[in-house]
Length: 252
Ligand code: AMP
Image (cartoon, rainbow, N blue to C red; front, side, top):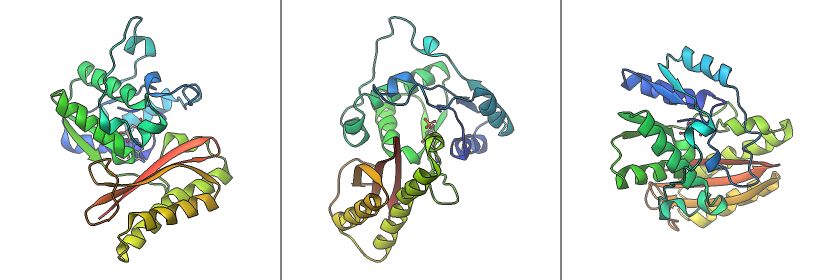
């Protein structure tokens, strides 16, 4: 499942599927229900023809790119509430986001039943939400979570990067730079989550980035950690100008 404006991060999911499956399907749908009021639904980049070319060049067999009225005909009301894992972090900043994500992924899997479904670790919490839903609702699919694909400057690829001015882009590259710095601190033996968190906050503030959250959680959960004595994930959500970006890295 994708929202289009495809980049190498999306195509890495197609490649992972290609490696493992006989037939690969992709979906392109800018899902209105996962956008909150005042978010970027209307200006979200849409480039279907170019996306179809990219998918064809990755030998994707089938593309499903429905309209909003196909996915949500008049009277469609059901929503999936995934529970606690969807309420913190992104869920706090975007309270209706994960119900929109879970519902559309469930619908897409019902329309296009798949043996395997591929998601990127870029959206760490989303992987946990989907995993919870698949387990709780006995959805007959095996999930695969793929590594974050980055630009040469380290920035996680995202369709939203297209919104950034050159100056914002330079500032935004400090999100991934601060994650690399966090990894370096960890490799040097730092085990206090708060020390690492503060050092990230300082760096982001120094580059004109407005922080939504910087959080260190136990890997595979959204539980905050104090002491980094087990694999943990550092999560950042921050704004460069009006553009909200997320990124994360595993400390292990
Ligand atoms: P989106 O189009 O943003 O909804 O993303 C569709 C899928 O692509 C999700 O599973 C994302 O996690 C994944 N994805 C987006 N960007 C990246 C990236 N830079 N690296 C790996 N996966 C990504």
